[in-house]
Image (cartoon, rainbow, N blue to C red; front, side):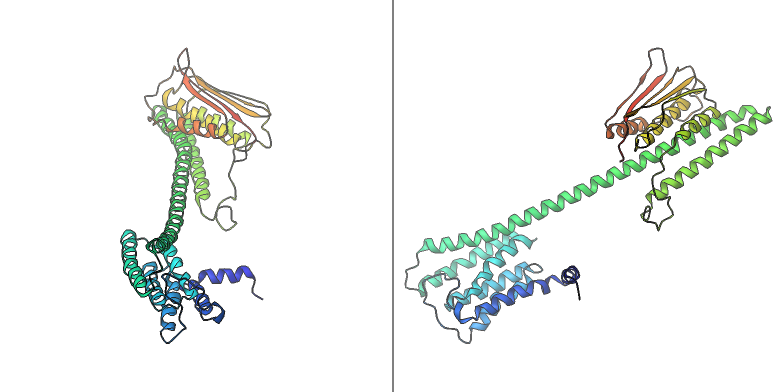
Length: 392
């Protein structure tokens, strides 16, 4: 037995013309019911006449084109209008007359081009029909009644136009949401690449520059080159992890990713400090408290704050004393990284300011506070208060 959901899916996969045809067939069948004969739309003062040989043509023109009401709304409206005119002039007054407001509503909702021309042409065609019906009748139907019926048709068109405007607005809203989502995702990717690449490459540049002056000390030169190699491998590992996160199959069990975001452990802060020390930056590291088990993304943001601050220290205050203080509380993590500004940045690549802006955004998203400013006695201080427990 086929489930209703599967039947609905199959129905939706059919061509729109096939899905719209049953409505026209239903109205056509109802028009031939003797009980409904003469109970349809009546414009003018002509007495209802019985069906004859021309009836099938008139009713077919009114009802069957409704299959095109969404795929070919202009063609549908033209054919239905001709059928309606024959129906009224021949005075069948069938219930198939309801097809005209349906065709108008569909044209207002689905006609994309030449909308104004179609409305003007339909209005112009209504005038001779009203004149003919008035002359064929006894004259009892006044002009105001013809105008009233025309306004009812205008209401049908206007309803369709209102539906179309809502659909267009919804499509535009979805487009903007999709564009904003893509922009936010590109920004997030750029921020992650900046955090990973800038830190490691800066450390490698500083270490490589220092290696030039260690040719007379083979042991120190070997340690420096080993540090460059280790930093490069760590950069490759972080980049691979980031690429895994960008893989569409990530987290589904079919990709090559690790299956989840790799939040840095408490030990990675110490590793980060040690690698910065290997690059020739004297760093004092103090960590208080124990990371909360449910700190959420606060741990990652705190790690990125320390990483970016140490990267900037290598760039702009290489060799100066740097302090890193991290305090884990029950509800928040506080980070403070400062330099005394006594070093030199001559051997370091410049920056664009994107890193600090990205950190501020990360902290703001979690509802925290971030500041980066020059210290009173020289140097630079980065401070962050990051609420813990946000899983996003």
